[in-house]
Image (cartoon, rainbow, N blue to C red):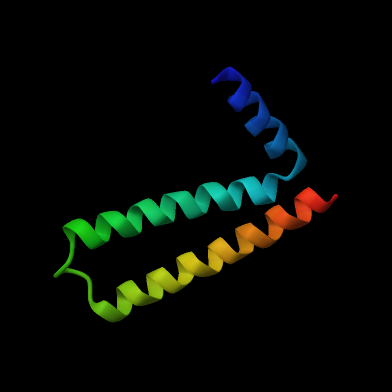
Length: 72
């Protein structure tokens, strides 16, 4: 586990934007699952679909920045 943490910290130092986008994507994905499980009737379908679109946009940005970071 400490080796994995050291690798994560090295990647975060090289590409802080890609690392922060990955963390943001993970948090938003967890929150979307939480909303889908516990607030099914409180959130309208259109609001939830726009939230999913925003999560997908952040995921694409994370993939692009991660790819650019690995190419350096």
